[in-house]
Image (cartoon, rainbow, N blue to C red):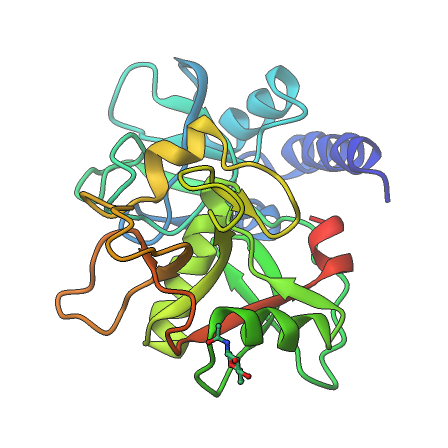
Length: 262
Ligand SMILES: *[C@@H]1O[C@H](CO)[C@@H](O)[C@H](O)[C@H]1NC(C)=O
């Protein structure tokens, strides 16, 4: 279904349900997942307002922000208790502007995003983080960057591209939780030093440039043109690092059509 149509249908359903059921808890369960700032966070869109229940907050959010309302932050105990958020993601230490903070009493409620096409009978599987589902192949072997890229291409896929907050969060947490080792990301400055390009040809945006890097990285220490999440060190560094492309690491592939459907 078209996204706009889907949002409209969802809105109608919510209105009907709201009418029939009032603001009972089970209604919330059907459409929205509730979590704390420890589990999921988001980035605020627009100004906060006052709303009498989480469901009303979400409804108003969908009316005010039909294209971007993918989560809300709600707190029954404060004024201006309702905030609209963009897509939800797992907290990352390098993103300090996200809400709710891990120790706050705010709740986050997020809507599940569309599930991409995924041939789960072969090399790929679905992974869900805070309502976002991705289709991924996680490597079992350690290979250099060129080989990782070639291995993905052989499966109609490419190295994972983390060109949004939620995709960076997916990459970070999947590589840490499932691979638990240094993992190639589809980002290099091979063509021109200090010009970082995703494997689909897009430039690293200024917005993402603020978030991706580990402290004092990238430093190009000895011609390091390929980017990784480095989980082999304890404690795990907090962002992306540049390394020599010939190093051997794990990698994550995503089918072209799953990326296109995001
Ligand atoms: C990458 O690894 C492949 C073998 O998997 C090897 O043939 C190739 O020479 C390596 N490339 C670099 C740049 O190390």
